[in-house]
Length: 114
Image (spheres, one colour):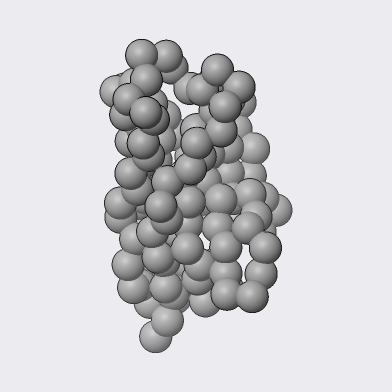
C-alpha cells in the first residue's frame, strides 16, 4: 500500500521560508508525477506546484517564490517556499501519481503570521 508522509510545516512570519518534504513508500515503481496542493479554510484544494519528468508547473500565486524538486531517493519531493505571505496559510498536501493512480498524504499545516 502506497503511503505519503509530509513534513516541514509550521508557523513562520511573513517574508520567511519553509521547506516541505514528502516521501512515498510502498511502491516499487517511480512516480510519474509528484506535486503539492494546498487547501485554505473555506476554500477548495488548489495546485501549488507539480513536477513531471523535468518539467515543473507552478500556480501563478507562487511562481518565483516557491521551488519544487525531486529528491535523489525514489518518490521523494520537496517544496522550497520563500517570501511567504499570510495568504499562503493552508494545509499543504503531497500528491504522487504512480501507474496512473493518485495518492495523497495526510497534509501538513503551514501558517504565515506575525
